[in-house]
Image (cartoon, helix red, strand yellow):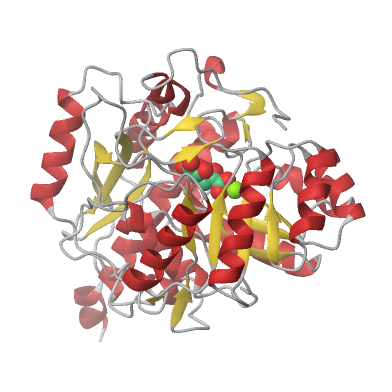
Length: 438
Ligand SMILES: O=C([O-])C(=O)C[C@H](O)[C@@H](O)C(=O)[O-]
Ligand SMILES: [Mg+2]
């Protein structure tokens, strides 16, 4: 008996952590700060254990994350892959360069304050996902089972519509995409149709803050006419004043599922929320646990858009969801440019959150490149929750190497995402507009 038990015990000591920064193709998507670069950095993390199991994770790949990921990775060797709580102790030991943090909105990423803790959590999350993947593979269990079990078999995502140019600016090297341009209401509706044809999405989010609010109101109206009764959202990333936010809310109140970050900061959001019955969602004013108390007590937001990358992983996402539930605040998911590893991670955790009443965001349809042997596919706008061990994805080493080589070949200009600088290729005088822009 004893012998059998020993024989069955696997050695899940972490023996190696591999970090592979890559550059992935990104279309010319517009936001209030500028335009997406033709290639954007991501970091792929692999955690290998003594028994030969490997788990994968993914996070931001900009230099400030790489600088933290390297010492973090070194500290993981010798620890148990199951020691997920220990990751937070390790994170506390990793020093963040003071020049990397500020209490200002993160201009590159459009995702709220940039604190030292949040930077650490954004790296920790990739290791947590990789450890869960390895642990699941070793135990023969899917990640959702390690998180307590799925409460749904598929997770719904919404079509993430962007104003976009047909091509990257002239003279800028990039991959061609087949989405075409979308710079007016007709273009936005056409893009939405393609999203439904290709992936079956039934709810739509438009990234706003690009054109004057009247033009964006017209685009959402056009969507409402083309897709009557479908949930619609508009997200200008805090580009509007309280007054403009209320005007937009009033004009679109009959068609909006929610308005996302119409204005910057909790006080402004609270003012808007007090004067409209359109729900407000955020991935900018509640992005850390420390920001919850003020926002919730002031009723500033009705839906928090979680993002496991910067909230510190899948288990922190579950904790956030529990807090939201306690306060009667909805929860859904934010997304930045990401690949299939993160989409799988999002799907596993979303499958375990009981009150998920809004389709999650995902940039994945915009990504023509991936590091997986098989891309994840949306059916009727949903991803089926994998029941295979771990995340249920497999790394394509040749693709990983190809995308890493692109990162190595870059002279440094693309290794840190900068939408403002990318915009200057088309408009040399461009600077990120002051907020409120309108
Ligand atoms: O507020 C949001 O939903 C985002 O920030 C998502 C992305 O960052 C998006 O705006 C982008 O990449 O341009
Ligand atoms: Mg947003």
